[in-house]
Image 1 (tube, rainbow, N blue to C red):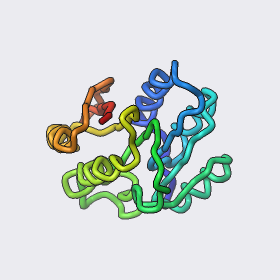
Image 2: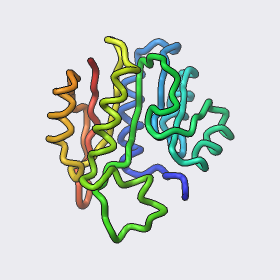
Image 3: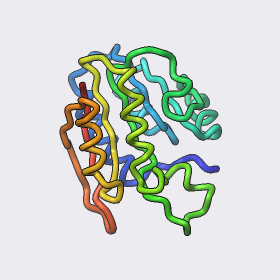
Length: 181
């Protein structure tokens, strides 16, 4: 399986990550979930944030992240994440609905489940154990991921939600949402 390479979604998240980190303490604990190529973690590092843990389900991505001198863990969401709190969790998840025409080797990086939102909902449920009252999640997803279901579930989980950016693409709209408890 190949490492997910930055595309429009990655760059939109990167732009908003830079804005978010503008006036934050450099010592905050950051978790870059599903790091892929490491674009978000590298952005944090370039801005002077060095307390970054990267993760990915893809072993090749984890080797790549370690070669960039990041602490990296191969894990499916929070399965192998130490029981600690993070000030910021960044996640550009697989968010597309299952497409039978897509090659199996790319589905792990792009498909969020049958409907596109299953991984996101699982992430939001698991993330709560790793957040304090001051923690933030920056999460990206698509109009194809059924945003109303994601938002409704997040509210049931007591998240406060704010849409901070979006971008219209050819066949979808991608969103960046900020979640906190």
